[in-house]
Image (cartoon, helix red, strand yellow):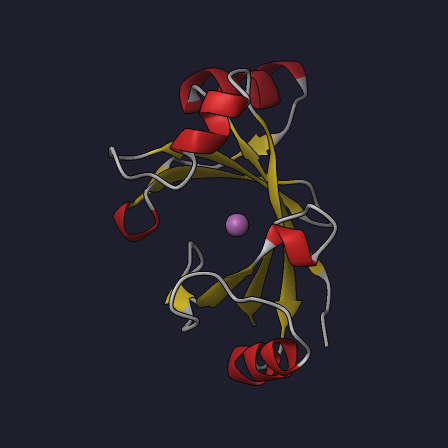
Amino acid sequence: MIGRLNHIAIAVPSLAAASAKYRDLLGARVGQPQALPEHGVTVVFIDTGNTKVELLEPLGEDSPIVAFLAKNPTGGMHHICFEVPDIAAAAQTLTAGGARVLGDGTPKIGAHGRPVLFLHPKDFDGTLIELEEV
Ligand code: CO
């Protein structure tokens, strides 16, 4: 069902500081910040050639990564995102197999303008998994 690794997301306390480190110290191709109010985050994508790194900073009081950063004040790996060809079919197969889709179970539009959903980390060995339809 899953295809290539689309990105690895890292929650950071400061998007500006993290972006500067990736650009200036690691010499990475760092994109422009993108506010995603519907997801409660501002994101920066870093193209590493074979995949991307997504830096996440909280946006607003209800940001879903506020609690994560409270537990991990210096930041940390937040989720990994796999590509799927049909997200509705993927959700159906997963829920039929006993995995939990977060939220109301319906996909939202993600940072790349495509449908995404998240799977409960307790169902996947402590890792939050995002699926993106491509
Ligand atoms: Co993501």
